[in-house]
Amino acid sequence: MKHSLLEICYLIGSVTFILGLKMMGNAKSARKGNMIGAVGMTIAILGTIVLHEGEYNAITLGLIFGAIALGTVIGWMTAKKVQMTKMPELVSIFNGMGGACAALISLIELGHLYHHGNVNEYMHPPVGMMIAIVAGLIIGSISFSGSIIAFLKLNGTMNKPVRLPAYNIINTLVMVGVFGFGGYFVYSGGDMMLAYALFGAAIIYGILFTVPIGGADMPVVISLLNSFTGLAAAFGGFLYDNKVMLTGGILVGSAGTLLTLVMCKAMNRPLSNVIFGAFGGGGAAAAGPDVKGTIKDIQVSDLAVLMNYSKKVVIVPGYGLAVAQAQHIIKELENLLEERGVEVKYAIHPVAGRMPGHMNVLLAESNVSYDKLVEMDEINPEFEQTDVVLIVGANDVVNPAAKTDPSSPIYGMPILEVDKAKNVIVNKRSMNAGYAGIDNLLFYDPKCSMFFGDAKKALTELVAELKTM
Image 1 (cartoon, rainbow, N blue to C red):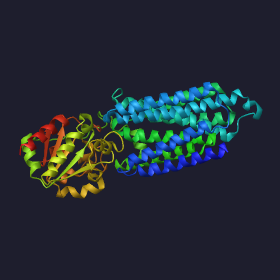
Image 2: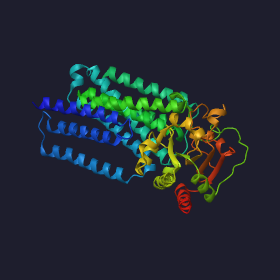
Image 3: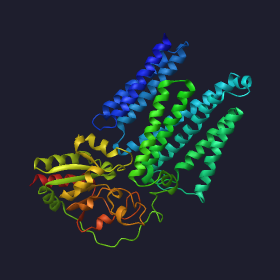
Image 4: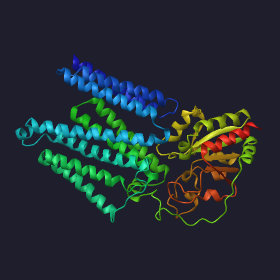
């Protein structure tokens, strides 16, 4: 009876995971989809505990619910306090914890296996079981250490990629060695000393895998590591014959892989180039040709007049908007313009910010209507009919060099074609290059004017000026 009820709980959990993921594909239903997935996970966890076939003693139950309570409190408080600019770092560290969990499960199961004497009884453990355990150990460990490095890069602790001599050869040899070690472990049956050695080797490879990758590629790396964690969880589902764990792992793994490929397409770069190219690291490798030209700036009073008499304004948000926490004042600017009959939209590049959907979530926080968030392919044809494009904190995703300069490291990357608009206004704190480490040709366009200053302060001044008109 208990087993049947547990299977029903797992079925409910699996269905809610699928429905929740589908709803997350639309900004309007994403929050509801997240809640549905959370409810399914809660049902699966409680079902596993309550409907377990064995008996629990008081100490075991106390440890289980104590750990759940501790994790819930830490996760809730962290998520409530985290700033929007730190959200990619939070995703990275949470993903790392998932990978660590998968690796620890494998180590614990190997300990149980050897402790109960199954290795001696069968000469070596069943091959299917060993493959699931070793795969979870390797992939989970790589995801854990790689996510920690990604976290350190995103928060600025490791702000430059590190490349060893002949790095690609070293990295490839280590990768082949780790998986070869895993194959030997499965074949021989292994022991705990070998298990810990394999765990350490996979940790090292995860570090080597992530360390040389530059900041501009961190969104792709986070998505790829997320797919690794899902795959590791799926192997755990095989190991325990747990349907909901298997379903969840497959969904996370496949969604992360697809998202990684979509972002690579948006950057017009193969995944191998992201992993081995160290794009976004700055320095000579990323530097494009010298740009000669003049820039012009615009005063807040002139910009207010220009926007006040426009018919259509498109706002391009970037990471600078998140850093300045200017999402609320930009919403006020939108409201003010619309009261005067100006059509306002937001142009969203697929890799704007530090993670997929970063700008969507940021603007949703200030109650910007989802209907106003327009993806790149849909908004590009509209720029020719746009009076003013206001770029706030974005850089590489609007750089015309991606279309015109074959020597540029971003050449071929689809961009927001803002240079087709009648007027382009760029809000930046300085003329510093973006994550790609190259100058932006847009700044020297005769139609472009620079509106220097912190985004929140500058937009507040713009709103105040508009209110006087």
